[in-house]
Length: 607
Image: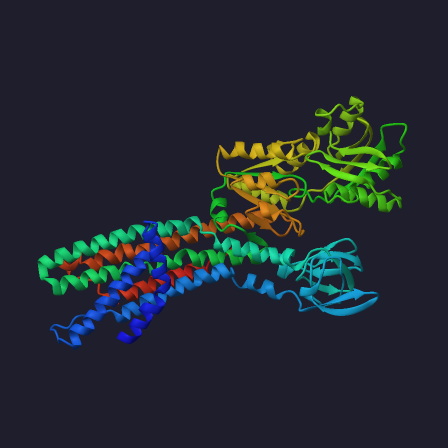
């Protein structure tokens, strides 16, 4: 046992010695210091017992703690391994993501299909995917129609229909039909790669609960040391060194935070894996704990509460020099390269009307307002009415006010030479999951707030249908950020947006949640990313946040509770009643505590 104990102490104890050194250098002894103290005392006392018993044959024989030492190091190493494993990958669901891509892809070159390694795919390569095959990269369909199974990537259980110009995600499975797509992102920028980076980043972040566990371990270090010294002095006076020394050593051994060391890493690993399985990508593990304390949920309208699939319901001229068709063609020229949700409705109408449009030059975003660009030598702006207030725009107020009173359409105005020359109206629909999400928030006393850049009539209509009493319209991105800051003064705040112009609010909120099924969602600004474009996933997020917080608290109590009970018993506080905790019994209790903590973490569920 002495040989095995020595190997375990010097080799298995390395991670703890290194951690303790760092803690002492920063003058913040914690879990690593407590473990190091316990195993060091156990080891050297056991070596002393071997020498005393076998060389000097002392009577009564001195107890040795090699068995307790071995058990202690093994369990603490198990906790360390679990923690490192959660950093490398948060569960099997995320591990599987790296295996979703096929090894080879069928690339179309000069009319011929050739097989190449997926790692060699380049942006703009055209790839053919046959029925039942895995999609090897992110891209846009250029030929064919199919249905795609994205369940392993996004968690979406239903087959998703795809046609020309629709996005496909690498790792999804082509259900039926052969199609061709153009690669739009290199492997390093792919959706799958971002998912892996997000989960790894989440596991590397120390949660608030883990910080609490470390702080508790710090208190235990001083408490155990103090109790051991006091117990040694008291028992030295009462029964002498032969009784006092083993008791002091037992206190230090039992004080090691076995279960406490496993308490939080197990829950973090389990919750991050569960989240990934359900289409929730956690960038920051502490975000789940913050989400459980949220009082206000501020959210964008377009793309978050509404589908963002705009349909052009009308377009009209407001200037005799332009025909109705001219208005649509100019708008199409400006919107053809835009990724904004409003652009899709315009371009669909252009295609349906078989219009030939010119390429616009120098097209730029006017943040919060719309677009500006050069079409056929003239400068045009396609903007919301908010643009009028900050620019010298000439328009018929009666006509514009009538258009803005439309509660079913988002209105954009076409401007040339500071004059309104036309208007287009696009309608959107509320997502089916929006109402259940709002109802859940209200039932749990969380106030929903809708923020939108759209006009007041549209905002009022959507808010009324969803039961949102607090909403603000005609906002610029910087306005939303200021409102988020204002609500933060009242209490913890979450912001939910689709990533379009929402980056300042997402990063500024206590919890930023990006929602959207596309690969271009602004994940860099958010703490949590909802892969599916379904507001009901916010409900799952809150449920998981609540259960994760509960499990962490339970595990902390189980972990710390063992030490709170065991240390006084080991010190002999109930010795007068014949109760004195031996190292053997302490090890059994330690094992039971560890098992309880592990099982408790594994019972974590989303719903």
